[in-house]
Image 1 (cartoon, rainbow, N blue to C red):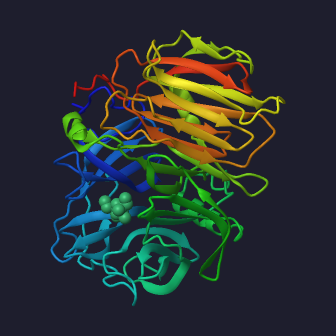
Image 2 (cartoon, rainbow, N blue to C red):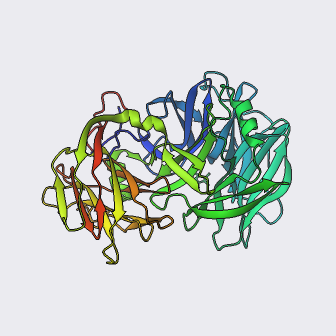
Image 3 (tube, protein in one colour):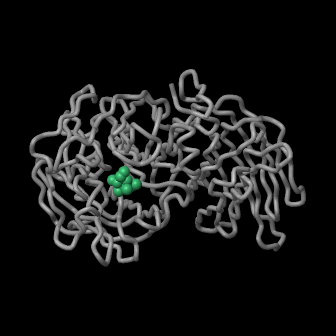
Length: 489
Ligand code: FRU
């Protein structure tokens, strides 16, 4: 049975019970997608970190699988199996992760078979025992590995006393690694670069043909100018991305930004068998620990997103196309002009919807000019979550100040930025009980947690303040879980 309560999402991945944090080991293998995740199987709070596992044919419907990794090896990983990745080693599924014991981090392997259910930790573990000089022995974690040339490359996140850095290693067999230096150094006062990833962009469609290993190496040999570097930074918890060049074992950024300024952390990208770059990220809780314990589960994954570059070299982020298959009943939304004030939408009433609307600036000269979509709204309007778009300033904001009557949840406003535009901005807003995930034209996205307390907080309203909203569409979305009836909290 799924642990539940009214805030358990219906179409976002959440652990069957207990704790989830980072996505790990994302891979498509023989057509099937695998998602591993940082998991405490005993309690809905962080601790005793295992690797949970689920599989899917479509990135939407997930089947729970047995736990893949347990922290059981003294001097290697007895205090936790921290984040890492999965690779296809010529047909052998292989996990690369960080073992924690005695406050030390070491990079380790686990070798699987085609069932993805038996994972053996080889006696060569750990494969990287100590960090390079100057790097903290605990802040040395989260390996991300890919095929490059005739061998393997790996980046590991690290912190020194003065900077955070991404360390590069090379290997011919995944077992013996050579340290090649820092591929990238960030000297802002963040202390730790968690979950680094480096991936070639712009490879869409190039790898079609089904072989993961080959499609990955093909996309790796593309344009050296178009790489994406990701990092989740402590203690600010900013999820940064950089677009730049990767050559001679160094990454040079050209552009940077925040991937998702909401309750979003530790995303991991992977190249699937069609050559897409798919990103999955952890969506944290914004409610207090007693509420997580009462619900019996904690944490979920954002919708899988496809990353690409546009003609101007800007990063685009959109939910994977498969997400459209969730659409069920469709309703039209009215157009709302700048003088129309607030328009209440009477259908649908649902806490699992996708809403698409286009917001245009009007030439009134008033500042600011915004349009707002209110979701999870009670009929009296006392509870509501407001998504406010300002095309002229290039912002989308989730205003949670009235999202919940529960005083113990976080309700500060969250804002994502994109380049301001005179053109209309199309907003896709996914609402899933306690998740509001907003995309502005694929140029910005923002994922926020909200915890409405009322059963009738299921309405929609649209209002304008100087901008206008063209007619839009809203769909009720299907649940991805069989017999979806989470237990009451
Ligand atoms: C990121 C992180 C990683 C670490 C894991 C532990 O959220 O702190 O750096 O490997 O979580 O669960």
